[in-house]
Amino acid sequence: MKVDMKIDIKKLIDNNQLKILKDLLKDQEPAYIVEMIEEIEAEDKVIIFRLLNKDTAALVFSELERDDQLRLISLFKEEKIKEIINDLDPDDRTDLFEELPANVVKKLLEYLSPEEREKAQILLNYPEDSAGRIMTPDLFDLKENLNCSQALKKIKSKGKQAETIYTLFVIDENRKLTGVVDLDEIIFSEEDQKIKEIMNKEPLYVSVYDTEEEAAIIMRDYDLLALPVVDSEKRLVGIITVDDIIDIIEETATEDIQKMAAVNATDTSYLHTSIWSLVKSRVVWLILLLLLESVAVFIIDGFSAILQKVTILAAFIPTINAMGGNTGSQMSAVIIRSMALGELDKDDFKKVLRKEIVVGTILGLILSVVMGVRAFVNTQDISIILALSSSMIIVVLVSNFLGSILPFFAKRFKLDPALISGPLISTIMDVISMAVYFSVSLYFLKDML
View 1 (cartoon, rainbow, N blue to C red):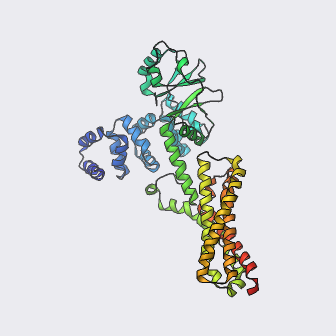
View 2: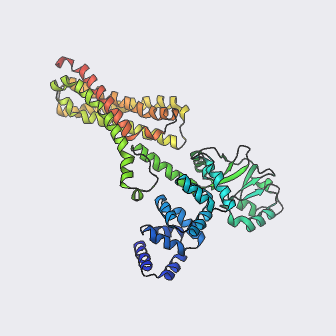
View 3: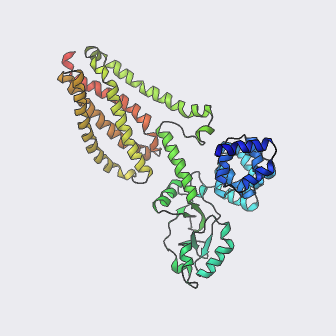
């Protein structure tokens, strides 16, 4: 059905049957309209936006990929740009402005009404990735001295313009946050009961300067629909809603996955990312990993004498390398995930270290036994079997140790722990594994030289 709709849209545009197209779009949800127009040319998208009412147009625009948004801004007439930019939610507009050159942002700010321009400038002045940047100032608050009847009248008269009315934040005469109350509590309370009597007097909140990830963790842990944002004097200045947090969680997860695969993060989806951008996001890391991996060549060359005498050692190089990289990647993934979920912080370093020394030892012993049995298939020389088994237990211990501590070191130096994983730790362990493997082999097999 979706494909047919796309074909129909293109056909209707080509045949200039715009009234039919307008009727077709009128009853569609914004998210579905995005799907319908996703693959048509930008010039045809401009025609679609001419047919949408301004509220729907703003919602559809906010859901488009960033490159589509930038292209459309260059194609829209001035009046259409003014209409869409003014109707965008303040947080979505800020997100868009972050991607634009300063001179373009300056021009777009001129298109905003004085009220919307003030909101945009306030949000843009907060640090990148802060709660202040992603909040919306279009909030609905209640004074604590209102009774439930007065509160419901206010909700009916002004609540439609608010981002959410299901969770309501309570302020005093100085706009300081004093509580939070759910809409259903107001509805089912006595009409003359004061809001301050039914509200939760210890609301969760974040500062405008807290990070967006901190806000996301609080909303996730406490299942909140909305989170208030306060300034340095605890005055209520905005709210973060659950849809904003879903976007942040998705962006953070995507960025972490890309970093864990040694790929620089991209802002657009795969099909909207250019070939050159995909190359740039990977090539630097691949060059660095290649050069780091080359260190293993010098190590192997330094032990060429034992390799020439005991050639079977070469056959087990891939196995030793793989187990070192796999163990380290497993461990780092567990630690990084726990850090991302807020289960671990830098103060838990010693607890993790003690635990993983035991885990690494047990894993090393099990794998060394398996390695010994495996080696027996190729050779019955007890010295070679001992060399391989001993190498395995040391490599697994070291790899598990590094996988558990490197994310903590990254955190301590204010780096993203996701960088210390995947290809990077595998490459580091390739170098260390070779040094361990040949050093241990030399110890057990020195009589063969």
